[in-house]
Image (cartoon, rainbow, N blue to C red; front, side, top):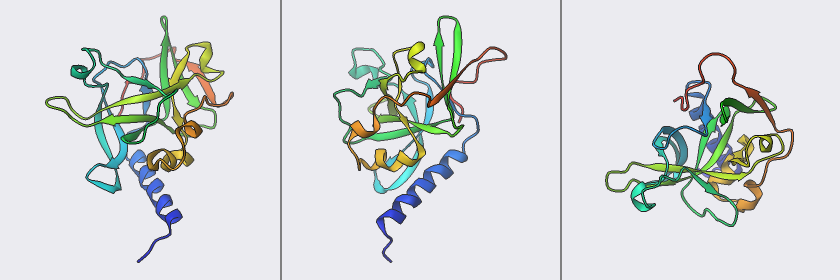
Amino acid sequence: MHIDRSVQAALRVLIVLIMFFRMDSPTPFDSNAPAGSKRAIVRYNPDNSAELEMVEATWGSNPRFSDGASYRFVRSEGKSFPSHRCLMPATEFQMSVKDRCYRVRLDDGNFFYLAGVWEPPMADYPLAFRIVTVAANAEVSRFQDRHGAIILRRQVMRWLDRSVPETELLGTPPARLFVIDEITSGPRQPAFVL
């Protein structure tokens, strides 16, 4: 039986949404979490390019291949990402400025994804990923210069399928996209909730 490409794409997005909702909620992403933290990522299965999967990966590049440093982020400017694309589902991202912590959510309350790239396991280093970053939008730029590239739900398959150029997805988000709240009481949300 032949299934139209648009129906196939819609089914893949539905699968990603189902995977996300199977996770505990909320799902904050802490930009200051230590390298080596674990996080669920969504990607195409490298053994079956038609299958989307959600797997656990380590945040940060293999230090053996980066002079001992663990790189958690990769700048989007001037780069292309022709393979190994992945997504991190999130309800917010968190940032720290001096001794204050903030949560950044979409203005409409929806969850989103952070664009990433994954690296296969090598020797004793596990499957890993890095977050792709963009210049901060108007709200976030009051606190820091960059943040993870936001992939909205309607853009999921465009990122994973590489159906549009990176420049269409990895730009600075428009103003008034985010609501920023200071985390003032109670314990800070865990960096990674699975």
